Length: 472
Image (cartoon, rainbow, N blue to C red; front, side, top):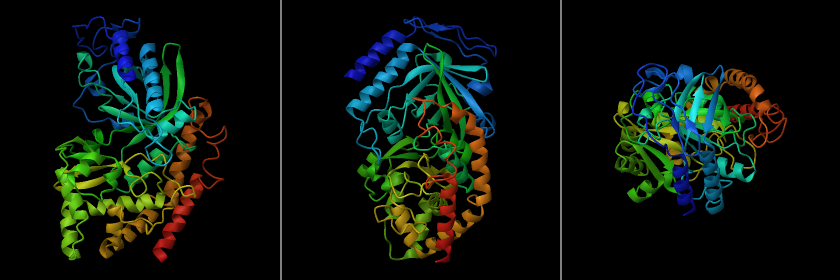
């Protein structure tokens, strides 16, 4: 009830007095400004063009995902909207936060945080009536409890198109949604992007990202919210960008049964959110049934499984995931991945990992991950069943060796880590409470070496474990 009252008040305070009918035909604006009842002005788009604001263009990765700069993003709230977003998060944390979300707790509610409208400005261009809301499980809940206000969030560029036709099908350089990682539990501020880049180099589909500095004005001038990792939506533009086709069904792991051990439709429907495509889960059910079939004729089973699952791609992901060390992915937690029925592979499901802020981890505070994954039980069939098969086990070892010599090689990893550290340094040094998740003033500078969780030590440990596995 409290959320309903807050939303009703928000709409009353911030709904436009009238809608403009005229739309400019030039490249400067799309519509006249819209005032709200609380005196806030939602200005029209500045610098509108087909390439920067319209649907139907490919995502401009060179512009949006530039590895050589930290893009500045300015977000402007109406004060009432910002307060409604804060109040809603307080409501969620007091009524439902603290139960789920894996180790450490997350938001134990079926409700998503509240969307409110903002204006986004980048490089002299603006996008009005963009939806913003908080996102995340433990990275949101635990940061909130710690007193931080640097939370993960997402931007939805045509969220308000029904009420504001001037932003119908609005895009940000071809992207409909962008997701922002706050670097929670990551003093290096790069784990999410570093893992995504490494996975992509290995041929694993993972959302492409970049680093951004986020500034927010809620009526009292711009505040620095810190440096974030900005990522494309794995169920959005990434499908076209990686697969060249977004017509297949894609499911987001979203519950305990997403360990893939139960092939019943009820279990799969409760555990996987259908993001597009058929969304009836019958195609997913067919794959999970074959995976768990246990056919004594292993050759026949492998043939059948490879018709519904990209097995080699799954093993490619698993080998890299094992070398990197991931506390919060499949095999330790039933979330942070998607399954895409790729039309280019006749509908075979492809494993798409996601959300890597707890990767590059090897210390003793979480269950250890060996390269063999012998510790993983039958409750994780995508790992246990594949690695227990002698043919797939040989292929897995080949992939471990290939990764050690290729995308996970010390030379390539160290070069990327050092480059990103230098790029992020000025922004990390500018972060300040409450808009930071860094564990101490010197944590960023100490994140590369000098401790069990530092990136150099984690990288060395992954290599040592990988080499020992190959020599066993």
